[in-house]
Amino acid sequence: MDEHQQPASNSQQSLRRQFVLFASNFFKHPKMLGSIIPSSPFLVRRMLGHVDWERTRVLVEYGPGIGTFTREILRQMHPDAVLLVIETNKDFVEYINSAYADPRMQVVHGSAADIQRVLGERGLGAVDYVIAGIPFSTLPAAMRESILDATRQVISPDGTFLLYQFSPNILPALRKTFSKVTREFEPMNFLPAHFYRCSP
Image (cartoon, rainbow, N blue to C red):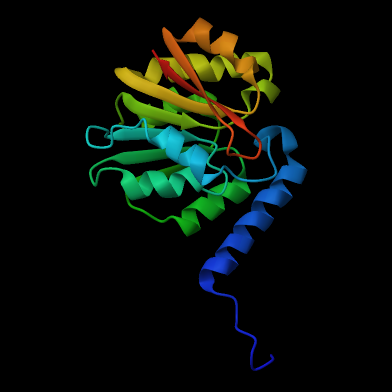
């Protein structure tokens, strides 16, 4: 090594590992990720800014990928809160478990459609917030409806389903399933994202 050359910092190595993992899985499963680049800090702040951290005790995240939202959720959530993470991709499950070890987090390798069963098995009650970025527009219609219906069932009466999508095609299904749906737009993301807040 050249005497002027500095070894990569741990944070640089971590970012490189995250990008390689995310990009390689995008090429293997493009319909499950939707974008080759993880969510921007702008999108993360916009979505999580709607969470009432003080009162929240049960959060669920669908499809965390490399944990862009997971990291911030764990940083802000109450010491007594529980974060249940559901991910279908085994590579991401292993990464989340190793990178964000936290006793408040439970990681499940499975489908969001099974959220009611997963919560029951863990003795968790109604959910305060479900946070998701899985690309609903690329899912089979039956699977999309199953996840949305199950999500509505598990959210507490004053809870919220927060999700972002790169396509507005999900809006009719959201309005059919939830009593109230509001929409925002975050241009500072690759790709620009539609952001929805849904009440049961």
